[in-house]
Image 1 (cartoon, protein in one colour):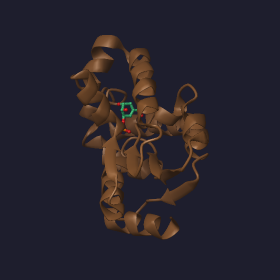
Image 2 (tube, rainbow, N blue to C red):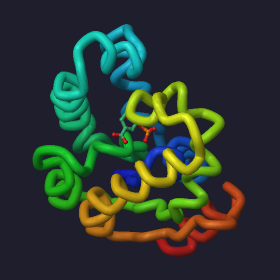
Image 3 (cartoon, protein in one colour):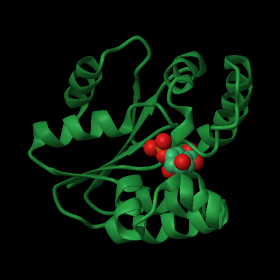
Amino acid sequence: MMFFLVGYMGSGKSVIGNKLAEILKYDFIDLDEYIVQKEGITIKKIFDKKGEIYFRKIENLYFKELIGSKNTVVSLGGGTPCYGNNMNLILESENSLSIYLKASIGTLVDRLYEEKSKRPLIAHLESKSQLTEFIGKHIFERAPFYEQSSLIIKTDGLMVKEVVDKLVLKL
Ligand code: S3P
């Protein structure tokens, strides 16, 4: 069985995915980290040197490499389900379940404000209000992809352990 964690940047995909894998005794793969390992360069540098379109191409290639893994939890990048045919590939892959970690714009802004420098798409936004406007528009475009996930877990106001408990109950 495979679990794909889907959601916007800052929604907790990596932390929750890691915990879920620990509980299930599954392998855990973070797609961004997988890309960094394979390419030997950070995500930020890939964006800076080669641009976003190149990133989306390799993201799609590495994502496809992971489909079909056994007993694995995969945390996808925030954009992975929203480009090319990726969301369909997630939904059509056998023995797998997609899980959307849903958070409100306010929650995401609070979480991302401190750590935006690592994230090339938002690193240039200076104030919380700029971040709010950007994330609001971005989520509006992306939600139709995220919302196709098989399970939707609302995470606002919950600690990591509470999200994991809520998730495990639904599996
Ligand atoms: C992106 C999200 C990032 C990373 C890249 C692009 C996006 O992953 O893949 O910076 O388009 O939302 P996280 O969601 O793990 O931060």
